[in-house]
Length: 99
Image (cartoon, rainbow, N blue to C red; front, top):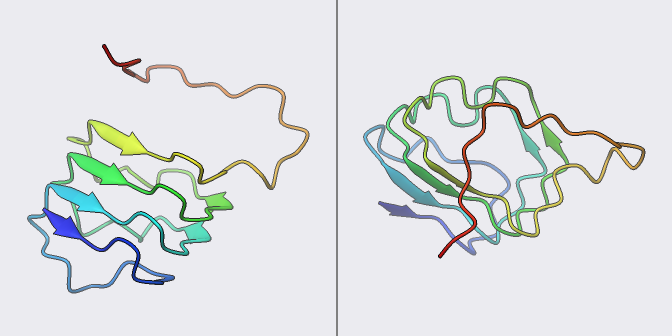
């Protein structure tokens, strides 16, 4: 588990151990998530990006995280740059509404 929350960071530092399974990066300023942003972190199971101000998420950003089970984007507004978006295809995405 790595806690990088609320550090006013605008990037994910390379110092995060590659074996990290849970990463809390909430309350930072990750305006863009590139294909390389989490590339090294192949063991991620849980990723919290709450309130990171995300505007751009590149296609295939999580292609190396085949074990990712939990992705939290609460209040990150990753689609705010697309005000005319009417359809969002979330095919093959498993999600939990809680208990």
